[in-house]
Image (cartoon, protein in one colour):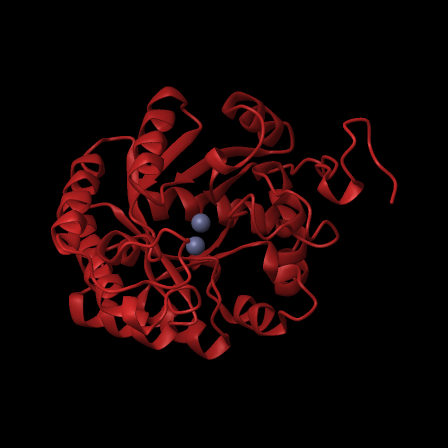
Length: 296
Ligand SMILES: [Zn+2]
Ligand SMILES: [Zn+2]
């Protein structure tokens, strides 16, 4: 396999800069703290192709603090703060080997979750923190033993978002019905975003009726993701967002290589094709929608 100058194979190399968007948009969900290079480099590279704003998403306490600090230091960055749905059961049950399987509930585990949620609550009050998330349910990585802690954490995040008037950012993996149920039971905040929207067209209609934003990531370009394209095709224009979820979910033709906000134009162009609109029309809507969704 050919190697680049740093000795890494091409499949690890950063994809090239896409042609710039004429109408600037936001990356509605990214994890700059998990990407290589500095924040300034990532923002400059993104801005050079018309991605002028990013929403930096926290997944644990350290990441949420970092998101808030980074948003305070950069006008182009807005923050969201949360314990990821896979983080909450880890706090309650302990999980030295990662997120996959939790053991028995730890002594003091519930109190530890409450302490962590209190810190999220404190961070959520900051002005540069525009949202609470990513929170929700993940039945892919968390087994049945972690469900209770996960739902308790999700409900607490919904309450925090509503009390502070912040946007709720949902992570829903293999848990569509329960996520919709909890939102309905608890009462969704005024602005709710399904990040990395993963439902089908039928669920998109449910989200549309509820006024939930649907944010599409690079996986909408994947060959096996016709269900996502069907959902995107029926989603109301005023509820559609675009995101990278970088460093994950790099769009085709760069699937498997590192993702970053500067690759948003690749996904925007694929989305415009699916919706049968021109790139500028879609970008104009995406920019307005993201600003409205996060209240900036
Ligand atoms: Zn997620
Ligand atoms: Zn994410």
